[in-house]
Length: 263
Ligand SMILES: Nc1nc2c(ncn2[C@@H]2O[C@H](COP(=O)(O)OP(=O)(O)OP(=O)(O)O)[C@@H](O)[C@H]2O)c(=O)[nH]1
Ligand SMILES: [Mg+2]
Image 1 (cartoon, helix red, strand yellow):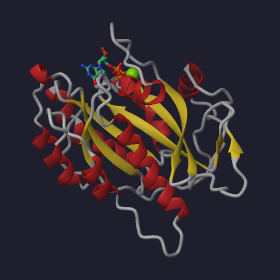
Image 2: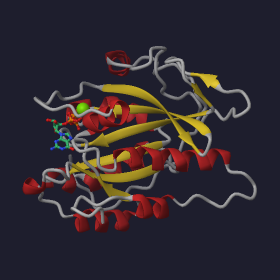
Image 3: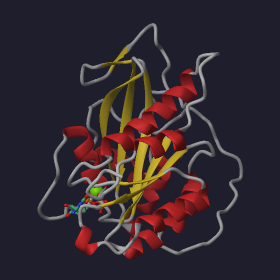
Image 4: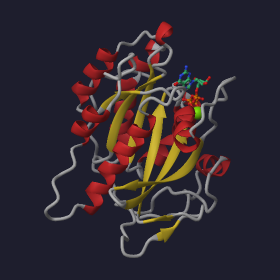
């Protein structure tokens, strides 16, 4: 993808609730991609854009779990950075070792988290990083409440492409989308080519929270999704006297380093 230094300003964000949400089955697969490819109707709306805030009347997800509020999170970044593995680690607590199977189009998984006694359902969309699927994923940005943007610390090009991804996000996503930068594969210490400080510097430049992760070891994986869930929950359900949740501060406090001593 081409690299652009400056972010383009967006010509007004649409907040129509005709959001791209999944078909009835719990873990969507090719159906969503096929629909997007056909350019026909996007997945059936299910949640309003600000989340389904119904604390007094919990909803039942298709997996049979109750939830109070639901949000859509998208994983984006170059092919091979570990988006699918990150999602599988978070959802199933396992690592997909072995040969790399690139995602085709788009896929999703649901997970319900307990955030301050509120059940938050995250509907997590795993996009294909390959350039040829870019037009498919563009169609889904608009309805995302949060984006996790990944690069691979063992692949310099994936880091260099972050600015281009940010340009794309600025162009297609909602202006107030919650964004977090993740440097994945920190377990591969021998192959690391992107220093933690480089990731921190870039994140600071763009004002986004940052952490390094490993889908293989599980480092910071739950934290990344929990932090997003907390931010979204607080945004949609803030009580009058409740202090504002500060995502940056929370991440700084909770993040674990990849070194020996959890620094
Ligand atoms: N060492 C290590 N390898 C990882 C990690 N995460 C993913 N991988 C490996 O990296 C390769 C790509 O992982 P995927 O999760 O499929 O990458 P992706 O970002 O989903 O790629 P696309 O679907 O093409 O966009 C696989 O061989 C994984 O086993 C990690 O944290 N550490
Ligand atoms: Mg994938």
